[in-house]
Length: 580
Image 1 (tube, rainbow, N blue to C red):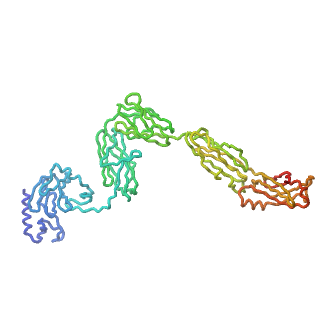
Image 2 (tube, rainbow, N blue to C red; image 1 turned 120 degrees about the vertical axis):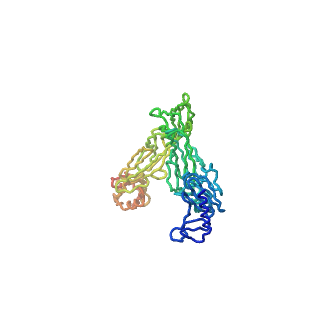
Image 3 (cartoon, rainbow, N blue to C red; image 1 turned 90 degrees about the vertical axis):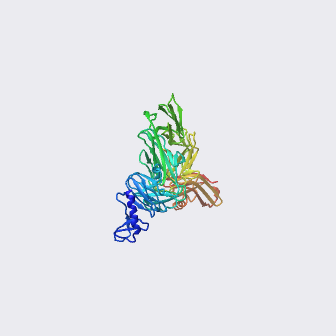
């Protein structure tokens, strides 16, 4: 009680003091303080008795803390002595600036201030749960949806915050998502094994959300395959991460997962477990929960089976598209079966006693058959050639082959657009071959009338085949001829093509019925310029030549005419054409 009497006497002295003397003064609430700095300055600290570890004043309540006693004077001047934990004390103020509780840092507890006493000591441990340390003695307080920051002995200040942006946490399980609450139970794992849970953070709002914290208490839980804050998640977007549970010993475990200000309590258990083995290509292999089991490769629509045994026997089940579990020979024996119809990696899960063993199967496509080109009609110049794509075996699934055509004209000649796949007149086209078929439908291409190399190709998967046809450079080819004479005019019409596009000369020789050459004999004409002009405005080497000659005398005496055309490849003669 010595300290109490001392403080009362000081309070009496203060009551009679009107101005600072000898470096001490009483403030407006009657608390004795010592001056600091320049004499007379009202910057001061509380004066407390010897042996006091900490003290404070909120304008009404004056207090100080000795080793194991808290001394408090209320607004009416009464003093109380309260048993308290060893060490210093800090007074935490509420939003009204008044003391609301005392914190004892060394003991790690806090007690509510009830006016002239502390809350029940049995409740002290729980008194500090609602606060968070920021740094040093600075605390973050939550009240009514608002945040306040302050130090012991000071009134907390409101922390301005932006409008709250919501986000949601989900558990990912294949293509399904399940909302996660304030706590989550991880899959069990035996000592030395692992289990995993995969999460997704979704932003359902109309504005981006900033994730600036993603962490978990250190220990047996680890975050992996994560995104790294700070990370903006766009409106309607998401970000993924996963948590692994890896216990070294049996027991129950818990830790806090932090996502910004959101907390999720992770709980998990580890107990001694059965030995789970699968017969893989290398023999019986002991499986570890959380570690993916590579069951091997399987062709589409073929069944892959792996023997499974659990010692001692426990219930087992599998999940995942294409996976099934069949009974084996005896307790604890099963067969894991897989049948899939989609190439790629298929994933499933084996669950034994709450432990999860991820399963993976690599599904391969059917072997691609080799394609070949089969000509249905003869490939020749100025022709439509019909062909098919034939497979080395009947298709076990539908295929789309790529058919292409290339044309390389001889040196000095232009391209010939007529050389194309029909009927679209294109140079590449997809060709569908249905499941069960051994060949495609009938296709066609045009060879054209320009000398060069025509290459038709087909590609299916990694296989390619080609068929090459050459449009040769040759003398003019005539496909139709007509000679007629009437009255005073003779007309010759020649239709054909010139694969060299180089017709230079035309010669005409008329014959009488007596077999003699009609006057004036052989008529020759240089036609290079005319044909050159024609080819510039026409694709390919096809042409029609119409020649007219005046006839004097009796035209009925003319029997026929012979025509000769010359190009760079040679001379083409028609033989005797009889007049119609």
